[in-house]
Amino acid sequence: MNIELFDSKYKEDVVNLYLKSYKNLEEYAYTHKEDVEVYLNWLSRRDIAGLFIAKDKDKIVGFMALDGNWYSKKYNKIVGAIHELFVDPGYFNKGVGKAMMEKAIEYFKQRHLDAIELWVGDGNQRAMAFYKKFGFEEDGRYNFWIRMVKYL
Ligand SMILES: CC(C)(COP(=O)(O)OP(=O)(O)OC[C@H]1O[C@@H](n2cnc3c(N)ncnc32)[C@H](O)[C@@H]1OP(=O)(O)O)[C@@H](O)C(=O)NCCC(=O)NCCS
Image (tube, rainbow, N blue to C red; front, side, top):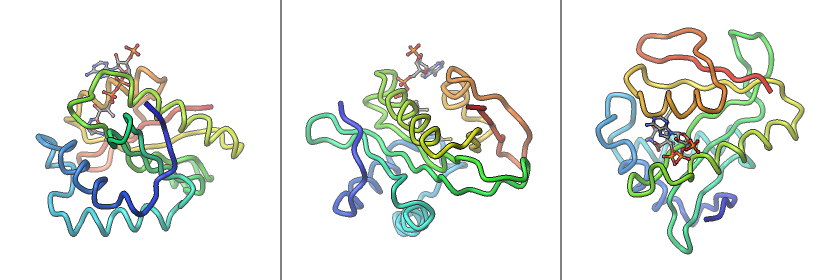
């Protein structure tokens, strides 16, 4: 399994994988292809160097969108943001998410950032347990979103 930079030729595959990965989590995700495409464009405008895919041979099994220039209202400074992270459900619990998280930590450390912020749906227990494993802590809520932070 490899972590590679995202390329726009993978756009269609990533959009389809997003919809597959967020099955049963629709209340926290876009459910229409067109919306996911617009979202993907937004992610690439935020930090084009922060988009990564995980590949198993030729198959895309994960995607991650990092942002090394995110102004956090809570912490009143620029932090690293993980805007998006998802894995093919057929590959859950096989270390794909872990490999991407290790890449994220390396990416933000290289940019001399000292915190990572992200938001997770309050009923998304799997993701919350995953983030806690990597040292993220809950630090606030906005509607049904929980803010999590990890200090580097
Ligand atoms: C959350 C998600 C990215 C995790 O990816 P993954 O590839 O299954 O995670 P990994 O296999 O790399 O697991 C890494 C660690 O987290 C732990 N972990 C994973 N799922 C877990 C769970 N449900 N409960 C507790 N721990 C869990 C693993 O035990 C592992 O630790 P270990 O290496 O010590 O065994 C994946 O489940 C996913 O894509 N979910 C749907 C989309 C989503 O919710 N994204 C996050 C939005 S904020």
